[in-house]
Length: 255
Image (cartoon, rainbow, N blue to C red):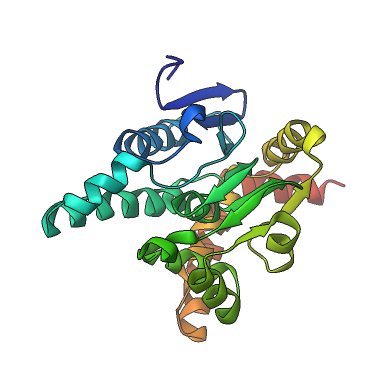
């Protein structure tokens, strides 16, 4: 997508696909067009053979402030069926992020709040500026961060999750790092450079191995220990048969 007026922009830069939430005047708030655009961009990026990582970012000062006012008005006046369809559309986005074969990295500047915080934490890796802010303020308007709860609970401890979900407070990026909500912090003025270097590092690694590792990690979540090991056996065998593994072993043995 190259039209600068689109709510979502997609560019392919060598091995990196960059997806940008492009509503800076609305703090990149989520609506139907943004959610559908994100799903479309993720699918397109995943089908590009050269792509080794996807970066999700926001135009302007903020990553994403959650649902916009029109979306909230729509929720308030919608039927049960319409609200169910709307919620399922967002659920599909969160599921798709895990289905994309390469790492999906959130690059967070400014605020990532409510559904925006959920979108960031749904990504495989979260990189943030030191000044970034995170939070789930939904309870302040009588709403429940229900779907993102499934993501948050897998990112932080139960007690940390409970506090974030029920207090509705914004937290700083250093605190988000401390509790495991994000992976790395970078100085604001160095952020773009650091993010670029980080995601380009995936090009030096085996694409098939990373894809198999991503799939397995999320597949074994909640499995009994023995079942997880059995699934690991299957993936171990598949990995051994890949071209990357065959070449990697041959190269190692020649050292």
